[in-house]
Image (cartoon, rainbow, N blue to C red; front, side, top):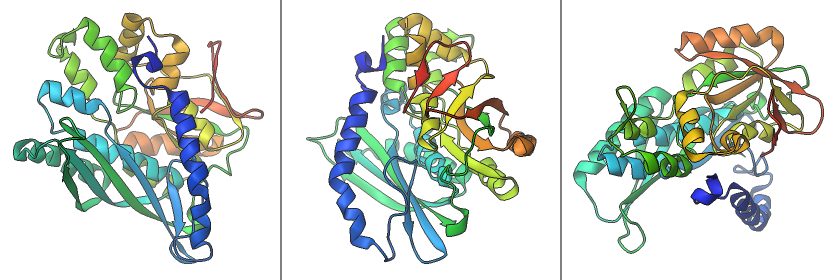
Length: 341
């Protein structure tokens, strides 16, 4: 089983994004020299637009994806709002921005006040964890387009112009600090669902005291507090949210390469997916976070400070590798493949 066979072709998705970008690139000139001028090209984790000479707005948009199908099967909707906040907030901090507000977009087949209230509980909890407000959004009833519902959002943050982190300061010899994930997060769920639910019922235990649906529905970890403190107190060269594309996301922030020689043992859910689905190892690492949900690139001298800050916020962190000169690919010790975003 592969992600493409399960229904999501990462390579075709990249081509589709490239086609969109090619058509929209000309619009960047429309605000050149004015408020709203774009300061980053397509491909980073967030967009940066100039507000004035000192302040820059950071924006990102994302959704929950097919994790919604797990919520529907479990009839449990009170955590996917956390995922929505996480998927957006974890992207926007990658440029050094502080998330401020999120607007949600809930498209439904038909309105259900009870389900909406449960979704809102997760949104409120996610907002609390990320330190943001959710002042509004949109609920659209689209019976001929949507089956059930879909949940997406747009987040806005702020960063001072001289404190933007793009990865341009990343250099060979820097260390990569991996922050633990809470599980699958909200990427690769199409593959994870196909494999797990071919062998287990949604309410069947896959580990002692842990049902299949509970494992698949585990909320995405939000890294805002620890990352913002690291930015404020340490020298941070680059930041990467490990989402779709797995650890290859590191290649989005620099032209240099990465050699990961101290990866933590992946959580048991990934081993089960690989075993049950006979998923190739490279496919696992280019689809899932494999236990590392976020990466901070810093100098070796600053690494202990960064690790201590993360741990103080309740997030296990450790040095998982280094930046190396050469082609911007990710190599993992003991693996016969390379990863490229």
